[in-house]
Image 1: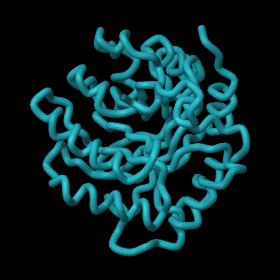
Image 2: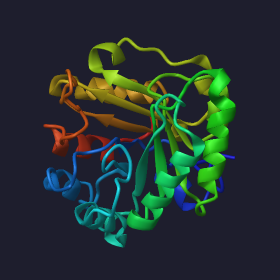
Image 3: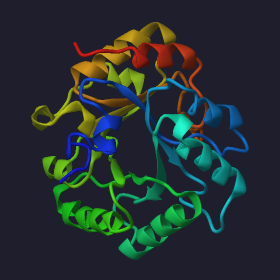
Image 4: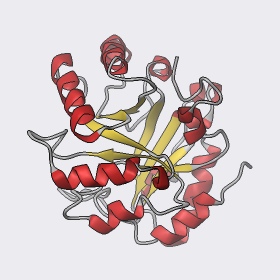
Length: 254
């Protein structure tokens, strides 16, 4: 059973408390290139549910001291308890189970991650059995690990029982503002879903937050950075970081 919903008093459930919108950082640039961004994630009061560490499409070939320092600061008690997730590249289900588990072991051994973000997770019903095998193997690496499936779109409904949280939207604001959720998502609480939206103008930030809540997302990442070509919209801090932290940090159920 997904850990975000049981048991009610567990740390995983508390991180994404029902009705409390929070942030999920899908992966800043390397801490050496983005020290301010990583430092801001540990600011007291930041409503951060989790942050993804991606060294080089995974944990890299050897421990990285800069990533180790960033990981240690996020794990510190004063950071407020957000989860640091290791980035596992599923490549739409084409990577072998053994490779994914090997990367997961390195993330646990080198950076002490508290869970995993399965990037480019498949969404079709035909791949569900394989994803379940991957998640089961990852669960065996520690207690109460947080597993997030980065579909980027609404997957087959059965995936909701395979992991703690599903990323059911990842894309541009122009698409998000007219998006609709799958009907089956209404059967699950908001903490089971995450939306990642880039290119959100400051003047539409409030609207984006409202859409996320209407569509039943408990975790979001909203940024004015845009993705174009090889540009990663998640690599740098949103230009309105202070505003989004304030707005989401004080959000309440509607």
